[in-house]
Image (cartoon, rainbow, N blue to C red):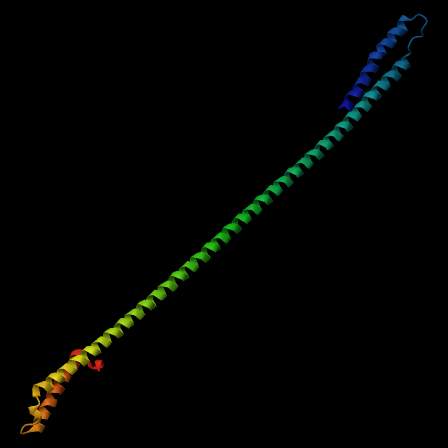
Amino acid sequence: MKLYFAPHIAVLSLICSLPIYVHAADAGAGTPAVSGEDLTAASERIRQTGAQMREDLKKARARLEAQKAQQEAERARQEAEKAHQEAERKRQEELERQQALKEKQQREAQLAAQERARKEAAARAEQAERQRQEALRAKQLEAAKQEEAKARAAAALKAARESVGVRAFGGDDPQAAQAAAKARAAEALRKARMSTGERAF
């Protein structure tokens, strides 16, 4: 800014000094008067000085405007770079957040799948154990039925033999008595089989 004021001060000094010189020439008796050529030359110098000052001011203003434009462009570039860096930082944060969320969802899905597999395996094991227990109970029940059927058959056979008696085998017709005893034993055995089913035997 000092460049702007210096030419103004020089011009004002020249303009202010001109009347002093003229007044001094008129007042001094022994001093020669200022000629018109001197005044013309002084005016021309003042005009040239003013023109040069205006030109210098114009150039200085242009340089200042160019400097301001350059500074503004640099500031805009820095702001754009800062905005770009901020956008990049936010983008990276968003990517990291999404990646963390994805990994969390994958872990949760994996844990859920493992829990489902564990429950399914436990259910299958429980079902297999239940089927095994049912088969064991069925086998035990079948064995009990067989034992019961055998016991009833033995009891029926024993009762049939006892009903005939020893004399039935030593009477007038021992063969008929023996046949009758066998028939009663067979009937008792048939009834026992019918009560328990053919598989019991």
